[in-house]
Image (cartoon, rainbow, N blue to C red; front, side, top):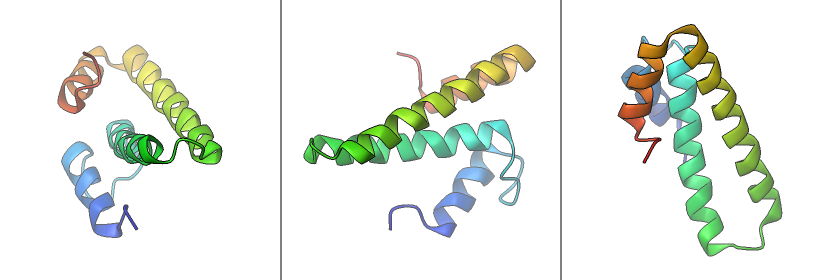
Length: 89
């Protein structure tokens, strides 16, 4: 399994307020980004996996919604998470 409990705790500890703070916006965005990168790699080798493709599109939409929310709420936190995760090119 690609997403273990330890990996989740590491993501939330690095981007959230702590390893048990799974509700923070930054932590959820970081988790979605990790899952999106894993699904993107999977779809490069399995082009006809349409269910995973649909899941990827839904995850990107969820991450976009969280980023929009964070941009409206606190622009500095938004800029920090975008820079840290490298979402803009």
